[in-house]
Length: 130
Image (cartoon, rainbow, N blue to C red):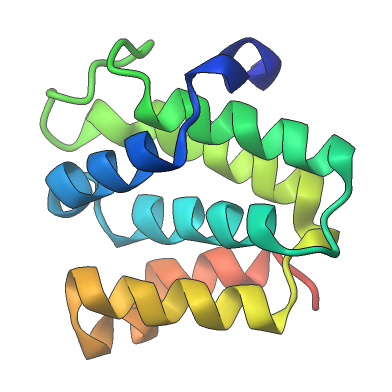
């Protein structure tokens, strides 16, 4: 998926608005993946090339028109997760323990304390080497 065409759709306000409205529908794995990318974007360690990839993936996440509409139960966020995971793979070197901790702390705000122990979160972390 070419995330660069979605870069123009990213905004910090749009990101937080989408998560605020649809976190429960999207699920912890999608939200955590988005948070990892968001906090990697804020990190001074993240290269410009990586930031462009992140902008594209987050732009796709907040874009109201998807390949698979987000309104479809269960499958609506599969394409978003795919875009986020591709970006995570591409920018994994920018995701350090500080970025992970910020993402997990924020994930708790959406899903509660136990969310960080969810197998989906553990699976996402397994794709990232600190």
